Picture 1 (tube, one colour):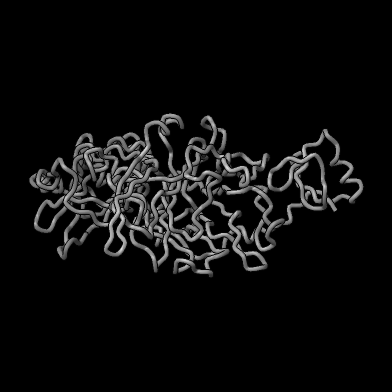
Picture 2 (tube, rainbow, N blue to C red):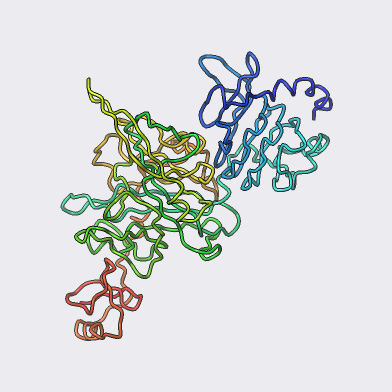
Amino acid sequence: MKKLFTQTILSVVAALLATPAAAYDFQSGNIYYNVTGEHTVAVTYATEDYASYAGNVTLPGKVTHEGTNYQVTAIGDKAFYASTAVSNVRIPASVLAIGSEAFVGCSNMTTVYMEDVATLQANSFDFANVTLYVPELMKDGFLEEAYYNQFKDIIETDEFDVPIGSQTFVISEIFFTGTTTPEGKQYTDDQYFKIANNSDEVQYLDGYAIAETAFLSTDKQDYTPDLMNEAVSVGAIYAFPGSGQDYPVQPGQEVVVALNAINHLAYNPNSFDLLDADFEVYDESENPNIQDPDNPAVTNLANWYDYSASYWTMHNRGFKSYVLAKPEVDMQTYVNDYYYTYTYVFSFGEYSFDMDGDAYKLPNAWVVDGVGLSVASSWEWNVLSPTIDSGWAHCGTTSNDKTRYNKSVIRKKDGNKWVDTNNSTEDFISEAPASMLGHISVGIDQVETEGSQKAAMQSKSLKVYRLDGQRVSGAKRSGLYIMDGKKVMVK
């Protein structure tokens, strides 16, 4: 370990930590930098509102900007300040100094990995909340330096270079493409998400929310005001219910959020059964001719907002992106205070038109995971801040690629953890077979004779539902029904 480290570095700490009050000099990937020397930079924040980072952050040792190579030698004052959505940070050996309040207010950051000792300030971290991981045989050397004994714990690891995933939840699969019918028509009512607990402890979904971006990755406009560094512009947001510990998810467990929690085999034999989904997206439609089916046996997400006048569906070509967030306000406050009106200029050939639109803003600091989506032939920009996701996954390569059906984007795993480096290009298997296609079932719990079963189902004491969730007085024809919460086939 560096015996003369402290004495050597103190003379240059001030220069390394010098960061202008106004934001950053340049951005590379999902990190913001200030130039501190001819070939040195310090990590800094995006805006004076701070809260600039989210998820699992890995800092590079070197970065290139406009042809110049820089060493990342410092983490500046308040660089990660109030980034409540950060779960883990990896700090390379090139970092020699970490500034005042650099990691203060990162309430969900429980782990930090450091390759070598850096000079700390007395308030660089909320030390008592953070476990520090260091390379093997180096713990004693860290403890010789000032303030390191204040960490919650220091643990040596032989897997220092292995990235770890989010410390809470991640989006582990998005099935947005839909299936095809035997006649070759597209069927998208079977869209679904999977959410996974990527920690070693029970986590609760209560109060988390899934949101879809308002903007498309295939249509770049100069939206004003530009909120990307502070918030996601969303066109739909649905929250998980619960008062805190109503919906536990075990370590390594995935839950299924279905657009429609029905047995889709009844409508498309090439699809699958989602009757046993864990949650369902349900909308009260304003159009009497287009109603959203509701499975009474599956818990509905709370619709905080969506743009549709009937019911919301995912973009089935993958032009919108998705985030999982933990809102810090209730629904009514969100609806009242987070409305977003924007303007832009739409150009078509030699003509230009002033345009405006509206959406809702979801602060980046609330986002715990994000997944960018697009296709290679039409991609124009990433609609998520690089602090959330610096890449994108895909199904198909062109706008109307007919090979995309039945395919999903599925997050990779490293051992028993899902990979989460805030780069969906690297973190996901694109064009993967939808996982639910491997779980096809006929959804039959009981089979009765035509006479006895139909007679029983005519009883007014029984609660009988069609698979689309509509309650009926009895079985008028053969098929699958839900009777007192059980799936039943009537012959």
